[in-house]
Length: 248
Image 1: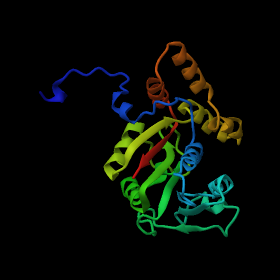
Image 2: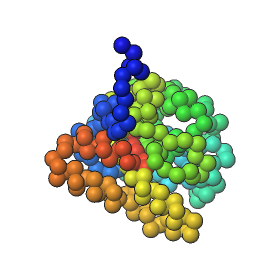
Image 3: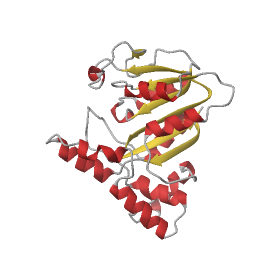
Image 4: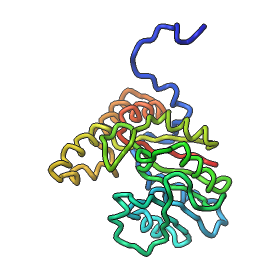
């Protein structure tokens, strides 16, 4: 029977994303934390790790990766007219530009592709995800974050659902895909409102620690005895940003 003929009742439906949910913890996280954790899991014997920062913006991640390990080789990539690139404090870093579609780097070049809050600005996301897959070495990891319930910012084009972004990753060939909750959407909306009076820093702490909404959800769901995956599913439903990970 055609599924369209079945009665449909509007309401929450988290089942499609369950196959992509981690079972280790349900804490709020951010892209850099997940990337650094993946770096710590680099197989023994590898003397260096190569990282492509896809959409590197002002280049702040370069220092974080370099401080983590002296064996890191980091290359930044962004479009020429990115507003964040114009604010880059250091100009002589190993960064290059691209047209927003084709990455001008060789196949199988990097152990990690890192992309923090970039894909809501990408005009052709499927093409760029395919390019991330192409430049990764076999066994490499694509890790980052993007927006779900975040107001328009910095020329953003769209938001994603965690499930929808996982489908894009899977279609590109990625395996062992995971999504994790980031800062909640309501906090991002309030941050955006306060941005009109230049007071966004009041909310910036909540990119690094559990926001009030996420803390309330985490506490309440633990009291109810809900398992880790279910807690992740609920928190992802309200996430303004979420983290993703996929292996080649």
